[in-house]
Every structure is written in C-alpha cells, then in structure tokens.
Amino acid sequence: MKKRLKAHKEKILSRFSNEIGIDLGTANTLVYVRGKGIVVNEPSVVAVNQKTGQVVAVGSAAKEMLGRTPAHINAIRPLVDGVISDFEVTEEMLAYLMRRAGEYMPKKFLGPRVVVGVPSGVTNVEVRAVRDATKNAGAREVYIVEQPMAGAIGIRLPIHEPVGSMIIDIGGGTTDIAVISLGGIVRSKNLKIAGDKLNIDIISYIRNEFKILIGETTAEHVKKSVGAVIASEPIETTIRGRDLITGLPREVVITDSDIREAMAQSIDILLEASKEVLETTPPEILSDIMKRGVHLVGGGALIKGLDILLAETLKLPVTVAEDPLTAIARGAGIILEDLEKYRSVLIESEDDLPSSK
Image (cartoon, rainbow, N blue to C red; front, top):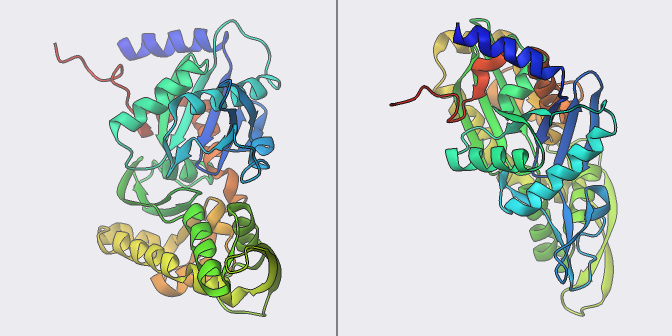
C-alpha cells in the first residue's frame, strides 16, 4: 500500500518538475533531458579565479584554459578517478550544467528529478557527496545508479532476465568491468586504469624517450590520433613541447608504435582484470557470455584495436557499443522513463531504507 501511495505521489509531482539523467564523468559530463535526449556534453573542467573565488568558465571553455592560465586563474577537474575531490566546484559545475539543460525544458514549479551515474564500488561517503552536490545544485530528488548498470541499460542489454551480460566501461578516471544478471551486478572490478592514466603514460614515455615535456591536452590528442593497441599500417603525428635539456620549444614525430609502447603496461592491467572477473563468474553465466559476448562502452572503447585485443585475450566475441560515449547518459534516461521498473538497480539512499527504530 505504501509503495502504491508513493508511486501515485511521484506521478503527481512529476507533472510539476522536469527529469534529468547525468553521467558524471571524470573527463566529460553528459546531461539527458526526458523527451529531448542528450542536450549537454561538456568536459568536467571548471576555471576558478583564485582572487575572487568566482567561477570564470565551465566545460569546453574551461578545458581550453588547461595549462594556459595565469597564476590567479586555476582550471580544476573537480572529479578524480570518478569521485568528487572538490565538493564546491562540483556543485558549481552541476548547477551550471543543469541550468544549460533548463534551456531545453519547459519551466516547472519544482526542481528536477535527477538520476546520476557513478563508478561501481563507490563508498557510502562518495555516494552521499554526489547526492548532496546534486541536491545543492537544485535537484528535487536524486537517484544514484552504478555506471556499468546504466551503460548496460543504455545499450539495451536484457538486465532483468536470468541471462548473463558482461560490460566494460572505460571512462576518463576509472574502468568498470561488470557481469550483470537478474537486475544486479554478479561480479565487478573497478580500476583506476582509464583515459587519464593512459594520458599520463604517454606524457611520461615522451619525457623519458624524447626528453620533451608535453601537456595533458597534447597527450589526449596523440592518444586519439595515433593510439592503437594492435599494430597495423604505421601512423605518425608531429608533437610540440619543451626540450628538457635546452628549455626551448622543440617538435618531434611520434608513431603509433611509440604510443603502443607507452600504453602497454596499463592495457595489460586492464586485460588481466577482465580475465580475473571472468575467472570468478559462475559457469552458467559464463556460458551466456560466450554466446552473447562482451560489450564495450565509454570513451576508451574507441581506442583503435582494443576490441580485437580483448577478443584475442578473453577468447570471446567483443562488441563496441553504438555511440559508446553516450551509453551511460542514455541509460540514465531510460531509467527516468520507468523509474518503478528500474528502482531495484538504483543505489538506495538512507531515506529509502527501512527504519531501525
């Protein structure tokens, strides 16, 4: 009876508020508005004026400032490894993105109902930080879902059926490897090996091998343009940086084999972790995965040849999801469409738990 009353109350309240899905990522944050689709896709970067404490820019405008700011302006990435590291700046970023999303929504009396994706295995403290930051940014109600689950829903895997599915979400700060069945995560592993770590590997390799210092933006560009984990036809690009010996600007030509060598150790860890998850998966679910294969989502899914290398290592078919960058935001949107159906996949808040009194 209580559940029915709650559902009826929700139905009435939803007429007076909008509904938003947020993929809160270390590298990018995507915002989905019910009925409109994904309306905001911005880098998770905020530029703050240290003298006044004012936010100067958010998203793409702030990302362009990374490594180019004067002393009094600081370009901050408020999420590290998928977790809020700067609460106030995250709040500012969420408020800005929700205002941006508001341009696509009709004006309503109440604040929006929001579903937010977070990495698997986050602690209660981290979940509370996300919930509080989103509420302070103007949300009426906040629901939290683990990103691999949201990704699986976003690419329409049959998560509620007694069928095993395996998903690997390679984001900016973390990689989530999860096996899902009957609306729950059966086995999972969360790694700090993802897009940002690969950028650090490239910076370190170029510093050691070429004695040149490059920035994060250049490393990201090199990874996207010539990064390939399997050798094919040679690709090369020119990069510019500071010569560590003379201190002067210098440019060098970098090939795909250089980047492959730079990323090799991190990619090996990712492959081993995927194997470990499979080794502990129940045999019935394993036989489902053998038939259905492994699904890749997140920005890291676009690294050239990664699907082929995973397929060779795991001896399983591997598929890169269609539009892998937006899978989690799409999943958050699908949850909003039918919250009752997907309520069991959400991380419960303390308010939802039965009272111990």
